[in-house]
Structure formats: structure tokens, C-alpha cells
Image (cartoon, rainbow, N blue to C red; front, side, top):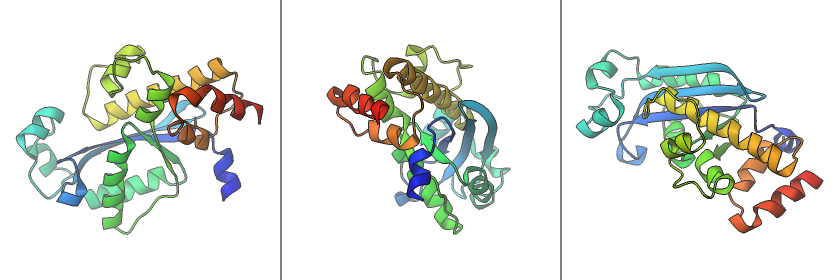
Length: 212
């Protein structure tokens, strides 16, 4: 298993995003939408998007932020039904999200409710962007989309749209690192490690990866 992880490519992943009723499943918040993009060798080969009924009301702030109304989710399938399908979609892939700690908490909580799990590992595109684009005004997704001219239809805070933009950011960062450090390939664990390297040590870290 360890050798398989070491060779997993960073450009073959699933990029995901959740919209939720609040900030934490520990306080009873639930997912209301999930969106995901499957990348194979840097190319989009699949998408997943579904609204879901959280079994509780969406407050006015979340409705205003996302545009997802109580009426919309009342007609949607249950979280349990959607997440069972989503578990099948992500199985066998490493996972990427912008501010991944947030999305991972909800993924774990919702899958735990139905007794499902996943085999992949997570990387955070926001933390990676702080290393790759240190001069960006900030590292929110919307700012980075504008900073790097990532294609967008202007929709934010809807799960599939955010996942599409994050996928564009992720592939752009991989291409940037390929060019900047002459890397032949970038294993997924290298991108995970990059998020933990101090900014001053990024060059040496990636040069060592290249030379190994």
C-alpha cells in the first residue's frame, strides 16, 4: 500500500466541494450539496453534482450565500442516498478541496452516518496555493480564480462550480511547478508535503524531489 501511495499522481484526483447548513457537523450541520470533478492525467473525465435534503432548515444567511433554498432541498434526495452514490464515485481516488479541512469534516461525518468510508487521502489546494502563489492578494478561491485567470461563469458557492474552479487551480499549480522546477511528474504525496513546507524551503524541497 505504501508503494502505491508513493506513486499516486497528483494530476489524477477527485476535486470536491460541499455546501452546508453551517460550519461544523459537530454542531449538527449537514451537507446540502456536493459537487466533484474527476481528473485523469489532468483532464476532466467525470463530474458529480447533487442537492440533498439535510432534514433541517437552511437559515437565511446560507440561502443568501449559496442560492440554495429550503424549497429546493425539500424535493432533493436524502443526504444518505446521495452520499452512498458519492462514496462510489470517489472510491480509489485521492481527494483535493479548497480549505480541505472543512470539506473533509463534512465528508467524514456524512459517510460515517451510512457506514461508508474512502481509501484516498486529502490535499488542500488553498494551502498549496500559499506556497505556489505567495504574492496573491489572498488565497480565497475567488481571488485566486481572478489572479490566475481561471475560466469561470461567475458562479460561486455552488458545489460543482467551486469544484470546477478548484480543479482549474490545481492543474494550473501542477503545471507551474512542472515548469518552474523541471519536474517530470508530481506524486500526490509531494503536493501534500508541499503544504507543510515553510515558504523559504519550497525550492530546496522540490529540487530534492526532482533529483531523487
